[in-house]
Amino acid sequence: MKFRMLQENLRKTLWECIDAGELTGLRLAEQTGFKQAHISNFLNRKRGLSLEGMDRVLNVQHLSVLDLIDPAEVNKRASILPPGEDEFDNVVVADPHIAASEALIMSMHVKEILKFKKSFLKRLKEDVEGDRRNWERFVIIKADAQGGARMYPRTTPGATLLLDRHYNSLTPYRRGESNIYAVRKDGACVISYVETADGHLILRPNNPAYPVEVITMEDGRKPGDYIIGRVCHVGIET
Image (tube, helix red, strand yellow):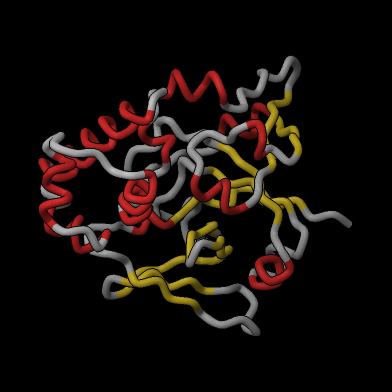
């Protein structure tokens, strides 16, 4: 896909947000640091954006280049896992920042492949907030030292965490039990319980030795925009 087409798809995406009342040209100019006339000229096809300009717009709108590409085109280059030939399905292991930002996990980002029973994956319930139809549903990350200890004993450092990225709502999966989530924060991934209060996400650890963390949600953003997915399985080596 050519750069010109990416810009056109970005215009289309931004106009959809504007038409839905979720964005204005003035707001986008404030977010990116561009003059309003610069943004207006781009939206009205009077000029293009540089690579740096594209990056700034994508960043403030929490978009990836993959969001601007036809899924069929992405699939040609993405890691399309072959279906399991037996009772198991393949699930990719990726770094947390990749699981947080990439709808489809490219081959270059696949660290390894683990197998899960098809029957187990099939019975997991989805609860999607927003549009994640093009997101690869299950991705595995490994808890680092801090992330694993933060939720101890429910997780441990080095544990494999199966994320269901089609479950980013705050609805409890089981009545009376808090979900564990992977959440984007400052470019990193925090494993935590999640609550909301006055426009903030409250990230609570299971281990009382670790502090509560807080995310201030941007205007127009919902909790599901920050939640990568629900931790639906923890694998701990012994």
